[in-house]
Image (cartoon, rainbow, N blue to C red; front, side, top):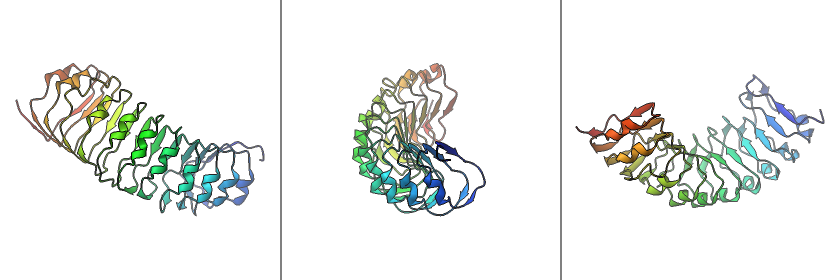
Length: 278
């Protein structure tokens, strides 16, 4: 199989470790082995795949430093792995990375500021891990970023002002992350956003009065289980593409704006457990 370029064996019942002979297929472009019962650490023999742009594995142990030698790697998915330790710095030597997907892998430590090296990256998914600290300030330099997932970690910090530089961002998801402080108004001027999910944090303050003025594409707004307060802005009615609105379990007061009833595509609305009147 020396000419093999795509090998996909995902979602089977494969056992044991990957045979070393597999790494002699130097022309492999896609290796996809997730959702199996493979065991052992991610092999350092991965360095033999010098041409591979897409790698999808499920393993235990740490991410080997040798992964930094995969100079053509564009997409990394070690999904649903039981990894240990932190993200190795060598991973940030791969400047072509467009998708870094590491959810549910048990990684720890702080989210590395070295993310700034990924100038072509479009998707960063680090949800359902044990990351601590804050979102690195260097995130604002990723001008091509379209999807950002930091949810279900222990970030315990405020939302950074640098996020306003992400002019191509479609999805901002940092739910269940222990974030605190006010939701910065500049998030609501990123006109490319389709989804904002900041549920189950400790965010406070009020929503900007012109909340939907600059969000023509917003479809999902999830802000439940925070400490947001004051009245809801009537400009929520300007989010003409909105499908789902979740603001329950906050401290909103006043009356529910009648203008919300004018949202033409709204399918779901959750406003319970607030202090509305009228």
